[in-house]
Image (tube, rainbow, N blue to C red; front, side, top):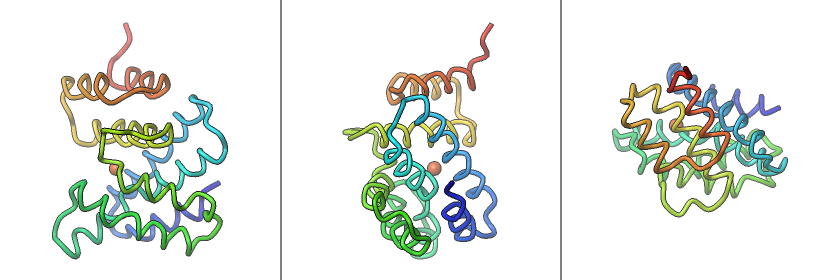
Length: 163
Ligand SMILES: [Fe+2]
């Protein structure tokens, strides 16, 4: 459904398989959670675009400033995302909100909507694994940040084997 945007994001990250695999995983987890939480079609489209492009500021951050932390991603990501969505076409109705989400996806306070909450949860599900986080870090993220029933279920199934 979002093949063109996915392909554009993959090409943008050419030569960087880790980031390409990261964005595909965050996109898919975001859609899984969105389905479980009964988001509207428009919210799902917003979330899909935001998830595919959420880390799009990293490359420019590294090129311009030699850094790729959350703050620089949030600052540079939205404009690059708007350009890619405009090039691909078909995202005019959700581009503004998607770029807003990209601009705050590392900010865990004042989460202003289900789309935002879900993007943050999907990114954390992937980052907690990719960064090799401790069980304590997983528990802390679960207790402090996760809110949706589907996100909590995914976290629990993935990181804690049921006996
Ligand atoms: Fe991410």
